[in-house]
Length: 131
Image 1 (tube, rainbow, N blue to C red):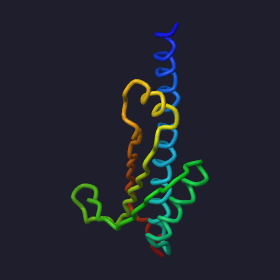
Image 2: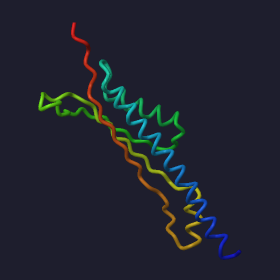
Image 3: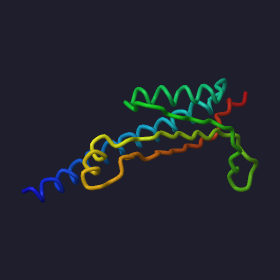
Image 4: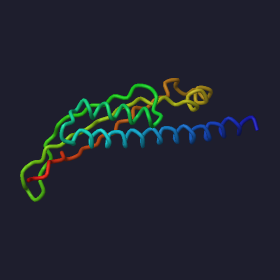
């Protein structure tokens, strides 16, 4: 029991931490898509896209610093046609393991249990309909 219990705790807490990490990754991926969508709408700026990313991440339960960058890009046109304007949003967040780091320290693991999550979304700009 003394040998198996610490290994079992390490395994279970690793699964729980990975679940939290994956949840944050999904929220940040959706936040990047939401920011890119806002950035492509007529009348909105890259600053509006970044604000939308921040709001989505906060509402999704992501605590801590969420860095977002929205830039205008030129996307290739279909069939060799002219390039389309678009917006690319990159979101980064440093996730620190909550449970795994203290347990890993018992086994001689590092105390800096963190990973940087980076997601990116690119969307073509919305054009107003021709009259």
